Length: 556
Image (cartoon, rainbow, N blue to C red):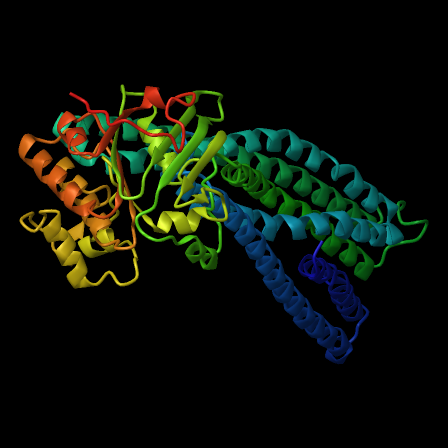
């Protein structure tokens, strides 16, 4: 337990001397004392109040800072785990879910730590101290308090188990709704074209209604727990008040160790009785924060789970330049096998050699693993067995960042984020000025597209651009990467009309001059323009050993 929680606990215990001073002042007035008789207790009460407020404020600040640092560490660990996972990991959490956990649910951990830890300390010590002081004056009053105390945590535990389950279900529903909403927003243009906007709105309404029901269920349980606490604490305080009142009237002579309680002693007991249950009230309020906090901790731990690793994902920036090699590089694949975590094998025993500056078309049936092999060449997926070498360097954690700097990836579904065209093309590359971006747009034949100017805006997911324009945007990205000696293109002409396909093929040929190009395609026209065409099934089990003479193959 940290010093902040100890300070808050000490502040709670300062109520004991404050109550004693108040009881002393009342006793002096009852004994016929004048105003001068209460100046001392009043001054002491004021000083203790200032000390108590100072300790409470300082302790709350320390507890909050510690909780914030702890949650910051959890968030950093989860972000590192997400950043180290391959973008092609099939089990990668949805963006909406990850954003919900990191941005919203993680705050529940702060609330839990800020309220629960000090309350737990006070429950351990404050009732014990107060019960001992009350027992010093009246064993009956202390017995009432002690007998009522176990009933409160018992009912809290029974209700709290249900509250934790409800909180976990509510957290899961919140993350699912955020993920669903983000996914539907990304595909809004597709939903409109398919006429599925109304159906999607009904689905979102149903998910939101489910979340509302789960949230109200959590609130109902919280109110029930608070009601049970208030019931038992109010009954216990009322019984103490009844006993003290009748004892002072002489109706109940016993219970005070054979003596008679004075007015000040009775008042002291009455003021301590509610304070006896105050830590339990704080714990009851923090108990539901604890349930939400533990559910958030479980969600953060789920994000922090390792997945399909991205080679060299967390390597320092200084090591990235160490992998630079003269352009263009040669590419070697040696007996490569790739299987996902669930045991599904994508390809096994693949070997391939691409000479520096060679243009190779990789063909094969759909689902054979062409895109996955390209991703392994780009260092986006770790091999289960075998090795990939680019420019003589292995694709390991040490060299992968630098090797990726010397590559350009042209995918059939390039990701576009909300921002300007310049930001989407430059991708923070050093030296990518407005003029170089404008030249890249002209090279990709995007200058005639409305809004495709360097300062033009693009929506999330490429809203406003067609499929062919998105592919040409990927070509523009590769054009502003002069250091990319290796071009990897995944089905760049898929689903394009003949005119756009011819433009993309011509632009790709121009871009690949003096560079190594490997393109996965079903397009016979694109494959015919390459130096060599290989089938993925012919690369298995040493069908094309590194260093061997490779005959030229064409696809009809």
